[in-house]
Amino acid sequence: MKAFFGTFINKVDAKGRVSIPAPFRAVLQARGLASVALHPSLFETCLDGAGFDRFEDLERQISDSFTPTAGNEAAELIMGELRELPLDGDGRIVLPDEFIAKANLTDQAAFVGQGRKFQIWEPTALANLKKAKLQRVAASMKTEGQP
Image (tube, rainbow, N blue to C red; front, side, top):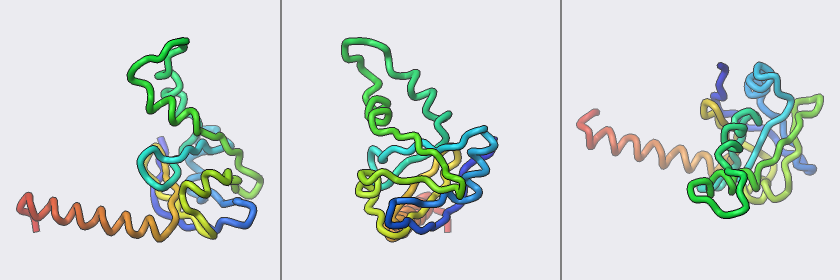
């Protein structure tokens, strides 16, 4: 199965339209999809995305009950925010205003592949996140006795 990988920075226009990177579109097309599914990240200031097929398993985790059930609150939160956004003829999607606000996007969006999913970040926030991750990895390697 093709995966989302790489980092791409694309322009966000005044109407909230942004192009899905061509390699990411290829992954979606290989799965027979013409849309992306996005939701605000539960823990970070970004958006999580994938093909809608990734969320079918999540949907099955939510029990069809009239009473609260334990263990599926994260799935409920995600499904409550999830949007399926169709790609236009140019490979663009229109980001909902509340998603733009959640990720602090202005005129650019950084797409980061993560295998079965991808994230959309404000580019400076992504750069800061990468720097912090590199520092943690370096510190971890030093602790383990690696150079």
